[in-house]
Length: 592
Image 1 (spheres, one colour):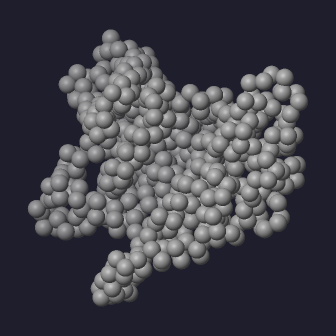
Image 2 (cartoon, one colour):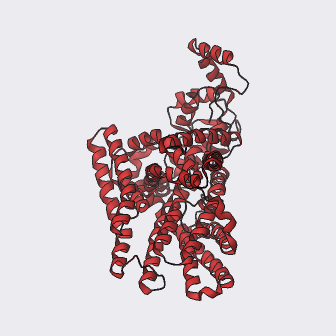
Image 3 (cartoon, helix red, strand yellow):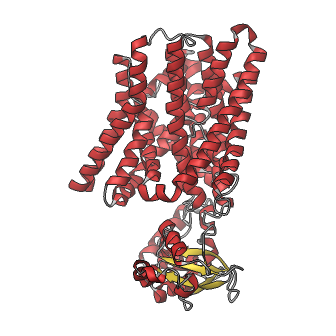
């Protein structure tokens, strides 16, 4: 018998546990373990059921998973909602122009390279279909190539607790890429259908423009409305009730998109709507962190099920049918993302803060293009629609397995991942431990032994294991306007100041200098050197965490500057008090 939807989802969560544990062992992002767990689960169920029940069981495995689509909708809603926070007003003021330049360069070069590569291959290998049809296929593929999978990208960044300029840039570009892709693709498809280049008998001419408005402006308007309602609920209701409204909203929107399309032939775009809801909420609501933290707590099984389900539905068989056009799509998309972002970073003038190869973190591709493939197959009456789906679905296999590794590499080399998050995350039980030993250890914990073990484990760790390296420092020569601009862009309340050689000068405490900013006469009289507290503490990289806790207690600050070695005065990063407390509160053996 084919397992029911409930049993199947339970098996998927078990596959996530196993896949995640294996991923931790081999030091790769958990999302890869989840994806491969889904692949293996589908293969095992197929091997057990198909020989006994015939080829129909393979189709039944796919049909059984359909009731779980709400899990997909909820996971995507959570992820796009979070990414919408990147478009919060203060962040846009800080990142907007630079982010837009990088995004424009990356999206445009990706579009041009994929269109050129796929057009050349389709014309060379499929000349008999006509130039117009081949160019149409190439342009649709090029437009789809702009999208970046938000789920895998955000999940990897959260897993490794990445924080910094590269992380913010990647999240912003993910949001921009998906907005541009969704709008441009549907505009292009519907315009070409209106002109007769694409045969779309299911779309009446009068419905084309209505469909276009609903997919673009309608989605934005719906997102604004839902974001405003969620903000009001957050302000008036308890957290538990707000969470219920949140989950109900995204489940209804996800299912409603499909229901409208099936029964009315028209619909909105769920992903674009979810992104706008997040952007509105983070700009309008107060104390947004409360709901976000609550959602993160309950999201773990949803995300795990989502990625295992993605692996379960991964079209591995499409790899064999990619062909020359598919190969061109994969290579040209990768080149466009990487080279385009490199050009954009140089154009935006942020090469000192953002890595030139930030485009490598934009290669993940899944949910958006899978949805586009379904749309094309449903509305384009041509064999080229199947070829579009084959190329897109086959490339998803490549990008979803390689992309998370490249996201990790980008933020790791950018110094935005703490060393502790890259260590093994094995649980407290060791492979050879007996039941008796585990029982004795648990009983010892009741007597306080575990607490002493935790302190000992933390004592063996040093500042370098939890510090952040890719941090901007104030130059001692910065004038008051530059100091104010720096503080506006920073997430800290204490700002290390260094000289031209990177030597420590002191720390500017926001609370001490707040009044200076409102005195215009001071603008030309003081600089960062004058404002810095020269007596501020500086901790070496090899300082044990137990001693670091004492320093934080004496200084009463949230962040400390880190020097390369004791007495060197050469600043190499910062360490946050909350990261230290998080490590000290973890049980022994659970450093990650």
